[in-house]
Length: 412
Image (cartoon, rainbow, N blue to C red; front, side, top):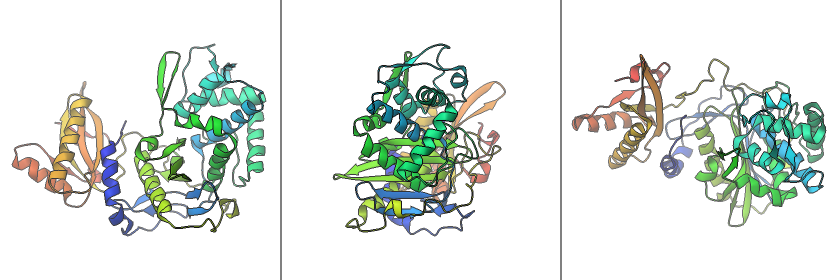
């Protein structure tokens, strides 16, 4: 699966000032917006950034527009679990079983042996680190007797917290057209988790756990990319795109951000970096509009980011050209080639050195890995390939339209 290296992210920060001036294309739909990136506009959905102490809105774009919450739903599941822990209705060491219904949930899940139990503390970490749907359902059944009963409690709690644009139907966030939320509501829920459960909030910054002798690591790449980031949650469904609720502390000031509707996880994280940077750069005495003063919902229905035919792995989905620098017998060699190409771009005085985009390609029964330095600015791919070819090395410029399945053009 595609994972951009951290050094690319640092390059984006150096480019931020120029990117902010990029012209945005017209949105594809009322709830989609075009955000600037080094190579062109990127599609995004609703977003918000809030000062966690004052509740002041530092940024918002369609924050009351309905959206599919996907696994951000698990923040509400955790809120209710923390609530019962605080009330001593359950304990961290208490075993939790899986019904057949919970056991048979769709991935992502723990995939435990039938009949195995885990502790409540392990359930917390499995929800945060693995975003496990089987665990979410098991938690709902443990706390309320059934997932349907748990959904009723989720909705009652959402109403109590002021999340007027949310409706929950399940504990996991698995696709249900009636399960909706808003960026505003997810910001309110994030603030409530930090405010109401300061002792449990630390779990959101856990980086790994061992369950059934399997090491599970966190999936919130943003934690590694932004100084001061200390939690919350990612979410993805084809219909919702890539979503993120994140919390950051800088110089003692906490900000909460929610972004949604991205076609790639790395684009989502980059947008969150830019929004937090802009929020921290603003001067404010906390006197601006508060998150709870925003309309709970602007009505309408959620937009669909990716339909089933589009929702496949290894999507390019970048506006910039790619430089194909070879196809290799293993992933390590492919990644080494990518880093070498990025280093060459830096030598060529390119500020934006592109993204890692490595795909597996097959010819008969032989499988290899094609390395493309992706999403390059105009002229950068040709400049890199010119330098490579002058040294007798292979390199070919590829347009986004050429980087589509089945990637037969990336075999050599």
